[in-house]
Length: 268
Length: 268
Ligand code: SF4
Ligand code: SF4
Ligand code: SF4
Ligand code: SF4
Image (cartoon, rainbow over all chains, first blue to last red; front, side):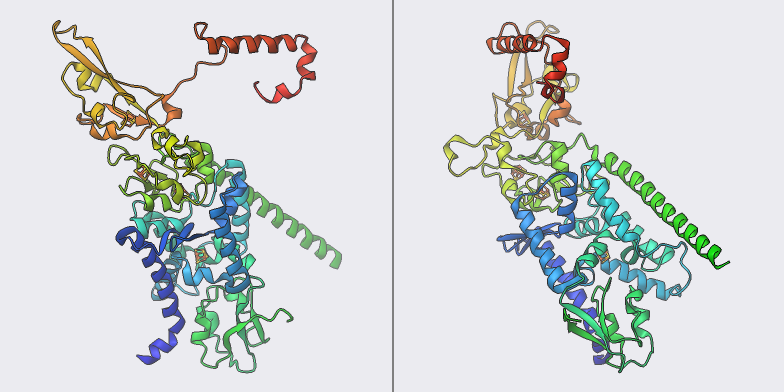
C-alpha cells in the first residue's frame, strides 16, 4: 500500500490538483462557493481578480478584438506564471482533458496496443502548425478559431455546467488516442500544449537527469508521453526540456534516483 | 555520384516541404470553413449589454462568468448541439427569460468586454454609479404570429401584455371591432420595437402550445428601408434630404468623385 503511494506520489498529487480545481469551479455553480468562478478560459478568483487563458486571449486578438483589462491582466498573470515558473505543467497538473488522455494511455496498455505501430503517422510538430494555423484562421474568420472546437473547454464546461452532445468531442479524443495514434491528441495535435511548450523554455521548474546514477532500464521512456524529450537518458546529464509537461511520471518509476525535480539554472 | 545523392536529398526535402505546406493550407481551409459555418448562429439571443453579434463572437472568451452571475439561471453556455457558437452564452426565453435585474449582474461579471455596460444608456438616477438601465437593453424584439395569437382570434388573453416588464409601453393592447361577431371587441397586443428589450417574459408567459409571441435577435427581426427614402413629413428627415443635396453639389463633376477620395471608402 505504502509502496503504491510512493510509486504514484506525483500522479496522486496531479489528480488532486486537477480534480480539486474542477471541484472549486463546480462548487460555485452548484453550491455558491465563489472561490473560483467561471472556467479556465477566464476564472474569477475569490471575487477579486481574473485569471485567463493566454491562448484564448491571443486568438481573440488575432480575430481583431482586444479584450478588456480584466481578461488581459488575467492572461498576463497566467503567462508569467507558466513562462517563468511552472513550464508546461498546465498540461499534467491542471488540464481536465489530461485525465481523459491518460485514461486512453492506460486503456491502450490494457488492450496491449502500446508500442504497436500507429494507424496513421503524425509528426509531433503538427501541433505547432495547428497553433499557427489556428491564429491565421482566427484572423480571417473573425472568431477565436480553436475556442469554438476546443475539446478541452467543451469537457471542462461539461463537468461544471453539465454536458450535452459535447461528450462526443471528448470521446473522439479518447478513441483517437486509444485506436489511432498513441498520445495522439496531447503529444501531436493540441495547440494549447504547443503554446505552453513554446513559452516554457526558460521556466524555472524542470526535471533533470543524472547519467551517473542511470542503469538504462528505460522505464522512464515507457511512461513518458513525450518520450523524445528523454533523448539524453543514459547519455548526458541535464535538464529535460522541450515538450516535457513535468508530470513527473519518470521520477516515480525511476528506481535509481537518476531523475528529479530541479530548478533551472540559466547559465547552463 | 555523391553529388546526385545530395541533389536527390534536396529534392526530397523540398517535396516534403511543399507537402507540409499543402497539408497546412488544406487544414486551414477546412478549419476556416468550419469556423465560418459555426459562427453563423443568427438566431441566438445574447445577455443584456452584449456587443453586436459579429463583435460579440470575437470578444467572448467563453468563460461562463455571466452564467454564474445570473440569479435566475437564465443564461447557458452553448454545448456543441445548441444553436449558438460553442461555449458562448445565450438564453431561450420560452424556458427562462431574462428577468432584467435592476443591477444587471451579468454585465460586470464579464472579464472580456463582450458584455459592455457602455452599450446601454445609463439610468438617470444612477448616473454616478454607472449602472446601465436594463430597460434600455436591446437583446431582441418580440414578434407576434397573429394567426396563432388567441387575442387576434377574439378570445380574451393578455398574458404577454401583463408579463411584460414594460407593460403598456413595449406591448400595448389595441382595441378593434370584432368583424366576425359584429358586437365584440378585439384587444390585440402590439409590440413597439423602440421600447421592447427582448427579455422574453412575454414569450415565457404566452399560453399557446408553441408561443405565438417570441423574441428574435434585432438584426433578424428588423428590416431597413434604405437611405434614399425620406419621410417628407418629418422635419428631421427633411434635413437629411438637404444634406444629401449639399453633398451632391459639392461633388458635381465626375472627376471629383476620385478627387474626393475619402468618400470612396465610406458611404457618407
Ligand atoms: S496537450 Fe492539450 S489537452 Fe493535453 S494536457 Fe496539454 S493542454 Fe491539455
Ligand atoms: S439581467 Fe439578470 S436575468 Fe437577465 S441575463 Fe442578466 S443576470 Fe440574468
Ligand atoms: S462573461 Fe463575458 S466572456 Fe464570459 S461567457 Fe459571458 S459574455 Fe462571454
Ligand atoms: S420581450 Fe416581450 S416582455 Fe420583454 S420587453 Fe419585449 S414585449 Fe415586453
